[in-house]
Amino acid sequence: MSYDIEDCIDDFMHRIGHNGMADSAGLVNKVVQQLKSLRVRHQIASQIQDLKARVEDASKRRMRYKLDESAFQSRTTAAIDPRLLSLYADPEGLVGVGKPRDDIVQLLMQGEGASAQQLKVVSVVGPGGLGKTTLVNEVYRRLESQFQCRAFVSLSQQPDVKKILRNILCQVSQQEHDNMEIWDEEKIINAIRDFLQRKRYLIVIDDIWSNQAWRTVKCALYANDCGSRIMTTTRIVSIAKSCCSPHHDLVYEITPLSADNAKQLLVKRIFGSEDTFPPHLEEISFKILEKCKGVPLAIVTIASVLANKANTKEEWDSIHNSIGSTLEKDPDVEEMRRILSLSYDDLPQHLKTCLLYLSIFPEDYEIDRDQVVRRWIAEGFINTEGGQDLEEIGQRHFNDLINRSMIQPVKIQYDGRVDSCRVHDMILDLLISKSIEENFATFIGGKNQKRLLHGAMCYQNQPK
Image 1 (cartoon, one colour):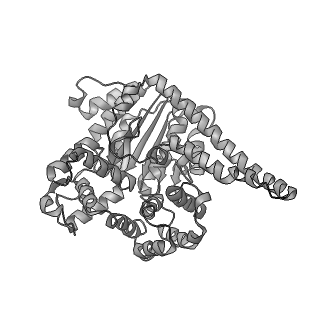
Image 2: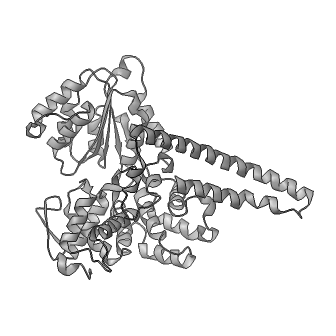
């Protein structure tokens, strides 16, 4: 927030502060300049109002959580991306989500009388990387206050159904249950149904890959007449239709970003705002966005690479040429793999090793920062010079991977530190293929089964 306040002051001084210095200008010119500055002043005034609201909210949070100065003095020296909260947590930082969010809200809440009280399932479908999870999370935020209880869970390709059911029960009931670890699926399902029977609930089932997994989870979601709502996301159209059958009009097909929104996302990610976008990069940015085909994950990934490069046409041309040819085979896999490979190839050698290690974790697994840092140290991936602390170096590596959008933050503390992360499905697929190619890990029984790490000690210094 302090960085945003500084940016607002700098913007004011740059765009308004110098106008008063033109004493030698004629009266007409002064009047023209004043008229031109009115619009700018209005924009900056709006920014100041937003910042004031954020400051007041932060002050209330501090009082509510009873934070004292000692809490802030206990911070570690690990590097923290100052843009982290605005990029991942602030809804205002999202691009192109407004219309689809409102469309899904309308699908969920439309209806009158008895029809509005019946259980309704809306399914969001689309290829990986288009932002299905982000979209339904925004809908979830918008509507959660209208429901008595709520839950947000992810299935993934090889779901642990019992664990998912336990997660739903804990979220909707807002409490832990004694000995729930030893409960079988039937007992957990009955407990969820009993709790939801007379409740108006909102539940999101994210990333469904099979009808069987959905049918099992659906057994727990009691079909009451309290106006309850369910949202699902999947990459497979047949599953999306199955989730909301027979009401196929409740299937929402997510589409890529428009050209304008794609450019806005790229520019916001690299420069912060379109006002600071260099005009000489206009043409090459259009060519780069053509390669991304409006896929938010691709745009964010390539933006992370460009953010670490010089803002010259030659440098951006080089990145553009490295992406590869236009989409030819599977548009959801081939071009995305090229783009993600580019981001991977741009990593320093030590970060490549640390990132490849994450391929041994299951899909959608929440990876604890401290745990994985200690594992990196145990494997010998972290080298120290000048007596630096190994854990501090490992945490910097972790934050660097966050900064480069190679891993996604899950839990973020009040001071901006990321406590855990998750690897996006498509990036995990890339890491698995790279691990096999580099002889870094062995996958027994398929990529979603047991993973064995080997050859790490000899690989750490010189990855291929």
